[in-house]
Image (cartoon, one colour):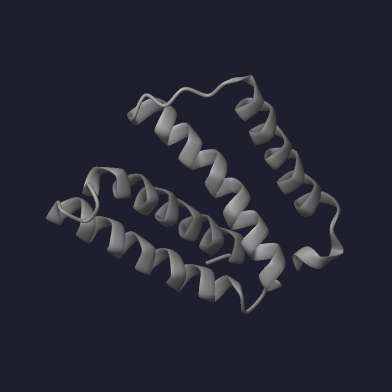
Length: 110
């Protein structure tokens, strides 16, 4: 399995886990709570695998940047959260930052 596929699995698991937090109603609903905790376990496991090959700062920047965008999209489509112009501009800057890291940084491990 490639390093970036492992990182993608970590990101998706974290995004699903974070999205389930809202459904857990403060950990008062069993299934969303268990699902959220399981997703976080998967996320941290796969993130730990990527840290053997990608510097921590770069891996975390990618994880958090992509995760923020995906969580915002999940919140938009599944929870009806509205994104105003400032939020969209900010998310765009995050995407640009992730692209710069991946394309131009020699620290990214590729």
